Image (cartoon, rainbow, N blue to C red):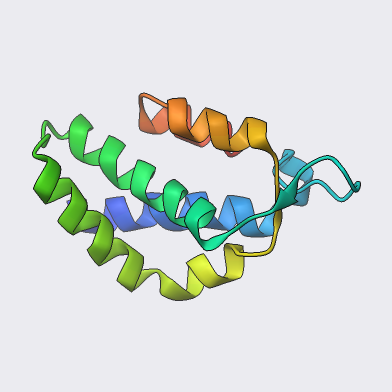
Amino acid sequence: MLRVARISMDKVALAALAFAPHLGLVMPIAGCGRRATQADCQLIVDKAVELQMKEMSLRDASEIQQREQQVRAELEAEIKSCEGRHVTARTLECVQAARTTQGLDACLR
């Protein structure tokens, strides 16, 4: 059950980046962002995994890294659909600074 919740959060995060232009993540005006790279999209997934594991009191760096790799493999198609979308530096800074899953969710809205 927890595994499903973690993957669900990751899919929500990627879907928000890839498919929600009205959320402020996708900037259609030239100069107001840039195209998301694979690394940008993976950052969102990795941050979601990290925060979820910490909220479950799982803080072992190697366990977190293994889970990030597993989720990346499971969400490969979603990550690919995120690539190339417009993203702002502000959104990515918010993702990096997020301390909770709720904070991450706020970055992506």
